[in-house]
Image (cartoon, rainbow, N blue to C red; front, side):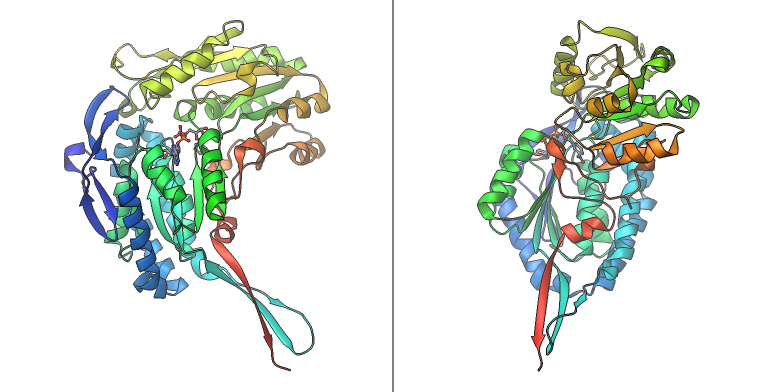
Length: 482
Ligand code: NAD
């Protein structure tokens, strides 16, 4: 899909079912080349206020009157349109984010799956009746919060929009979405498809813009009744403080330093592709990237050697060339990652991937690097690099594995590789993370699986049925009838 044949205007905002131009724009860049490819809207406080008002009007109007089954039907239609346009959406995401085309297509299919899942779930959220005093009937209702604010990062726009906006709409909320300034094309494309599917005006509003302008305005707006934020720890803290001022609930999906723990009895042939792919997917710019590989000492050398062989074969190049690894999102992100890697100059480089010779010079390429013999307290084993780099750490025995795995501020996901079933179940209990994988990593990213962190990885759960509880308020009704 060439960017001159888009089915929406990337320099507009979508508010109350209308596409509107704004005064200022921001440049749009292709990370694979570093070249400008257009402009996006620079929405601000005025547009956010208009969007919140449009969302409130939607709740008083057609959208607010729809039954759960009717909402599900609209979501199902959005899902069908997303599926039909999956190839176009993939090209948009590849150009905008720089992710290899196959990975971008997987994201488009995940967006469709979120719509399908939440379409089916919309009319299956039920309350309870509670046995109580004689003469009473007590029951609970699950009601929407009202206007929900969604702040999304640039690394997986389609997946994150699917999981948060999908669940919020299913529960009958009206959404104001602030996509990342670095990558907002698929958010706008999605809004256009939602409109085509018959989503009533104002149920979904999209305001691209800078974080400190549109994002901050959304978090501070008193009309917003719930905030869903995915991004960095620092901004997450600002969002939580803004939510505190208005006393609204907030879901924070932040970063990670997720470990894979490999015991000596692991099936290495099965584990190896996961060990590497989980670190380099989306050029390591994945919240749930596995950036730490912990290996029991007796097989440590073998694992490093086999991972190194894979790293040496990795090809890095433009998103549309669909190689193993694409560019980073921006020159700034490249600087951050390279800055981190300079702290690793004392570490052993086990292997690097190769940037292909014809990769455009202006693209933000970083060659993936595997670092061996890393101390668990080393800065690169503690902090989120958010680039294509993994550290390998040896351990002796289960207790040390648990101590190292749990020894960072984060707790997003973790995995354990072992053929010993009892140990696998023990490790699932002992690992501190929102998701634990046994003899796999990521479980294919299933939309059905509740997701979220502990510690600095955040709180609250999105995805799966659990998200529907987060995007609703429980009301208890106690009727006295004598
Ligand atoms: P970021 O925090 O800089 O930006 C995320 C979003 O917040 C963007 O839309 C941005 O415009 C907005 N924002 C920035 N400043 C703001 C402010 N003051 N008020 C309100 N909104 C503001 O993060 P990023 O660099 O885009 O993403 C990288 C981080 O996100 C990494 O730490 C990564 O681990 C995390 N992440 C987490 C998940 C998850 O599900 N846990 C998923 C993807 C990314």
